[in-house]
Length: 444
Image 1 (cartoon, one colour):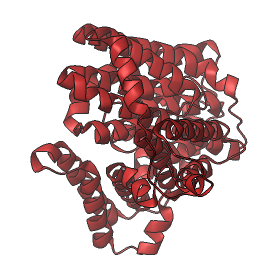
Image 2 (cartoon, rainbow, N blue to C red):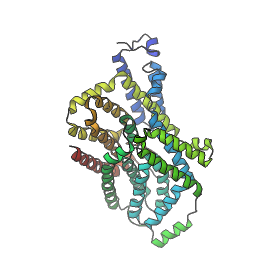
Image 3 (cartoon, helix red, strand yellow):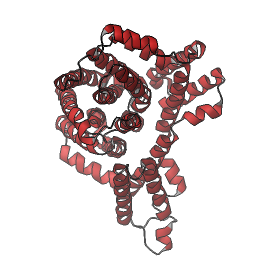
Image 4 (spheres, rainbow, N blue to C red):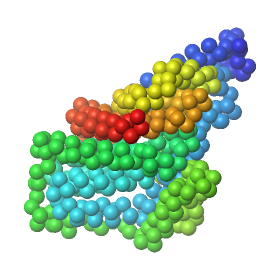
């Protein structure tokens, strides 16, 4: 059967049958994926835009179909939370929290590791993890520099805390945002089904990180308590706007409450984030142009381009075939499917960006849901745990890893691929195995 559409291929006399559409869309997807992996040479946003434009140019999707393939719930959620975080940051909130955290540690390296990791995990649960590392990593670089400690293992610890903490909620990590939107899962669903296992994994991972850093000699204090106090007193105070902070925290609190109530209210999380962030912008009277400049547009456009590339696979029927094969493989044995999907997702997410993988896999599970129904729900949570926690395996496993490495590199601290794996791989192995086995045990 030929596909009736306009585009370059029909113009050249090349018929777009279902089989040829599958071949073309798969080739474009693989090509886009390779470019994303090679981000050192091609920015991933450009790679996604190129893949999306080729999909439309060839005629696999019309511009209208491409636009319809974008999951705007995901885009609105990211956009809204970015705006709330921008205003919170401008108020000086994160500076206040970081300074209090430093005081709690009293300059003790082990306390610095635990306090900042716990703080990062908590922030990542309610903000996206890329945003969290954007303000936590510079603070950690400053603190470790003042205390004459090697910042690299501490930054890596923050990255892993961010990825693990972000696993606990719907809004904490991009894979969860994607799963929540495609599978129509609520904020409470993630708190009940994923958070307990991710929380246990976080504590275990942090203990492993402490052991590794202890063996490497990175937890030895270089300053006395008196010298530590002197460095604090020498640190200049930053800009604080308490009025703005109260407004931003109030709206942030309302947003979280509405996320919890989203299902009874019949609202999508993306719509909630868009509404509350807009109300906050109205309340603050900050320049709209200034707020828009702070939005991570490259991330949003990356998602949009990627959704179009994935839309080509969906439109051509690739996901139906993969879902059918996976369904035959798993059969009715959802218990085995948890381990198969969870561990394979973790391994794949460790070496390729977990965002395109999660979008693709979520579409496959969506196809399977039609045949298996609610009984396959555990597979959604296995995908969440595997894709999010597996991002700690290597430097390229998650967006937060790459962003943190770039921030450290700007300050003269190079985090290498092998250097990251020295800490990330053991921590990821423990957290993934523990979380998935606990989940499997309770759902077998």
